[in-house]
Length: 128
Image (cartoon, rainbow, N blue to C red; front, side, top):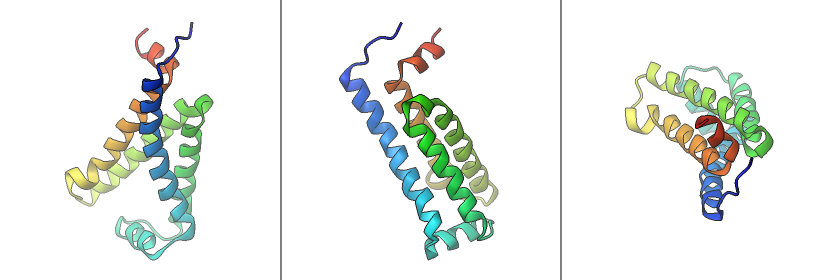
């Protein structure tokens, strides 16, 4: 039995999700064009240049799945894995904690909170 979601909750959820979607679209699509900053940053993280496209495809597919309500749950799971990989990489290279290591955590929390606010099915799963 689906309940009606308030407009405020829906707007807040989509705003939170929208921030994650916009960031990930920008990040993923930029990897296809390989600007100097992306190549340099990727190499500094320990990847080779040919990995950039693969990372971009994985980020883009996860984001597109998250964008559509029917597949948003799967997208959130895949984005969580993507962000987990980013955390592991930054821990490995001893990046600063709050600005680099926890940045993907912030986005994972934003993604799940946004989905939780806009999807009654997720709330039912969590509290049943």
